Length: 273
Image 1 (cartoon, one colour):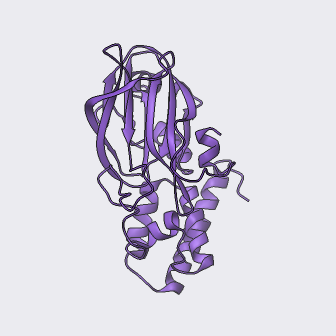
Image 2 (cartoon, one colour; image 1 turned 45 degrees about the vertical axis):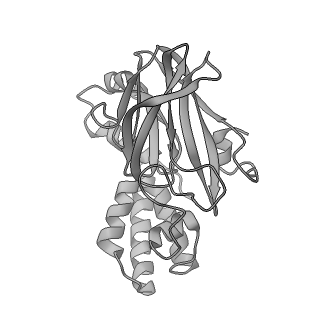
Image 3 (cartoon, rainbow, N blue to C red; image 1 turned 90 degrees about the horizontal axis):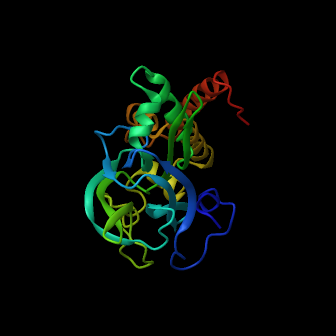
């Protein structure tokens, strides 16, 4: 099983502790600048940039199941010819406001898009990150490639160097504890699994799969999440739902938002079932 199959639920999740690194994709790093950060903000000034040897890198992660959600507890990008690098010191910090982390050759990404790309790049990124994992590609800018995975929560944390023969040959990030014990809070600055259900309705619906407003409403909210970026979802939730416990109101708001997103997706050529 590879990481993409694991996250897409094409295979049964292994029981017990994670069984090592799962392949996600290859990534060409032609400029020697490996970046990690929120995929919605692909910018060298935001996130962590690490100098590495130019070449082909393997992006892989360790999966972790939490209730019905499949997440990534660790993510790394290593030079393909180095199979067993050693984790070294922290070389910087990065974070996310979208519960996802992306990795790319940031100089190549920015050079491909150019300063005149305007909103086109951001719109492409947001349209491709709705599933929570994948590889951002932009048809008009083929040099812009960015794999990204779900971290389980927002927050920030260290980026560690991967070392071989005294040289940095990649990066590694840890998002949460791998153990199956009680302490499973994320290492990215926010507690997720150690929080009890009922603390945050949106987290309960999307991650814990707990029934909150009823089956129809909860399913609509999950569909809304699939049709928009994390920031748009959070903005809608804050402005329209907030702390409301009125099931009829939330259902009405969810129907309206879902219909709006379906119309927008179809206008952009998406096929919505």
